[in-house]
Image (cartoon, rainbow, N blue to C red):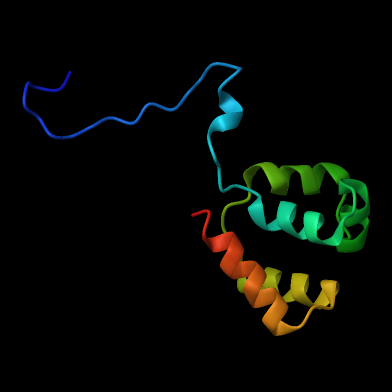
Length: 96
């Protein structure tokens, strides 16, 4: 319990089923954004990236940091310009 007059605040993260979806989480934003921009299903993106569907789902749920090699491989597979890919990374970084 905080002492009276203490200026620190506590942040409460909703844990009830009806409020869980309202918390914005940055995990998996890169893969979800790529999938949305391409307009493909999870299975189609997994095939494009050479991943199994469970691997892609895991990355969309839990992936938070990315290796340079992974980013270069994603950009190469998607055949986007460096400017387009840079805009995507800028967009994704705003969720952190």
